[in-house]
Amino acid sequence: MCRSYHFPTVQHKSSYNKPYPTMTARKILFLVLDGISDRPCPELAGKTPLQVAKKPNLDAFAREGVCGIMDTIGPGIRPGSDTAHLALLGYDPRTYYTGRGPLECEGVGISMEPGMIGFRCNFATLSKDGRVIDRRAGRIHDTVALSAAIQKGVDLKKFGVEFFFRSGAGHRAALALKGIGLGHCVSSNDPKKEGVPPLTITAAEQTDKDTKTAAVCNEFARQATAILAEHPVNRERVKQGLNPATAVLMRGAGEMGHFEPFSTRYGISGSVICAASLIAGIGIAVGLRRVHVDGVTGSQDSNLAGKIAVALEELRSRDFVLVNIKGADESGHDGLAKQKTAFIEKIDGAISPLRTVQDTIIVICADHSTPCTVKDHSADPVPVVIWGEGVRTDDVARFDEISCAQGGLNRIPGSSLLPIALDLINRARKYGA
Ligand code: ZN
Ligand code: ZN
Image (cartoon, rainbow, N blue to C red; front, top):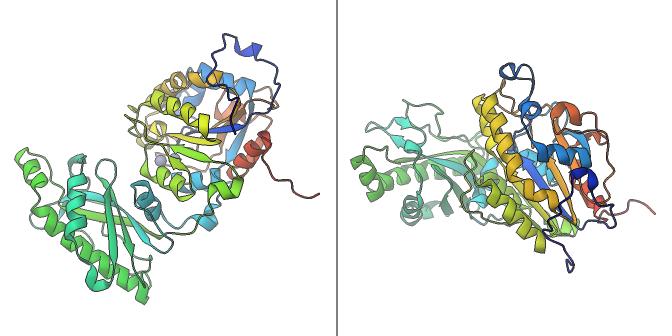
């Protein structure tokens, strides 16, 4: 399929001296800059971090490509990262989103079958009298031994339920339940604050299925706490003055749905490169190959150059690669506009190898805005640029929220992005005769 794929050819040309397009690209790269989009920040004299950051590479893509703004899900709809990524991959979240839990499970390596119930979990620290005193267990990492002890020790056979419990990054983990007659409309045991005991998980509507799941979860939490209390990893942590991981908090219950595989839906192969298990889980759920990169953290200190290098490597054998870079979202949640600006400049440096890529349509966008003034996701449309062979250009010369709004793409829904890119590689299905 990619017999004469040129990669990566270094060209010493100014960006205005781009070779005249002679062919159609055959590959697609989605670079999703998580939460990079913003609102005017008082700290930046009323500009957005993208407007003030020095970012010659992102601006060059904007200058040479076609720009626009995008409502990832729809105007006025504040996306989560999960629903946003489903939309960007062309899976309408209104149909396909069944909660965060099952996607987190996929992301930590649990193979989810339709009907299984998934939860995202945290290790937490309980006081001697059973109150949550640290919801992240001293930001413990490397919890694999703890998860293995829970997997081995917890017994849910009396419910006829099989379970899978795996560690995620840091203090995170995921739990999946498999069995007959399980529902997913259950509450969380996470009190969301410290100083109070974990909550009892309850069924939302008292159906038999949900009541059974709630009972299973409460029993799981009870047995897990008993196992964790005695675990050598925790004894060692206490000796070192660190908070032990003595409880599992569960939330985000959802039932695994059925996803039409990406390769069937679009006739192309694909990979996903990300730090967050949630994004990985979405990719795996739709049939993308998850590729690990050393040193990725989902934070500002992530190995961005490694992600880009691996993406280029993947493009040798795959038709589509999605790379998610998370750090800017973190700054947005923390309300740190200057930190966000600095991180944008770091991203810009890391993506310079993409400037010489050939045979590839490069799409750069955000999954949602995370304005520093809001410290959460907002529904403000995000900037988007599409660049590569055969792309019609416009007069936009800068990659930011305000400049891109003047571009030739105008304002598009997130669900249109992959179809537009597929058309540019001549892989879109014809509608009509
Ligand atoms: Zn996001
Ligand atoms: Zn976020």
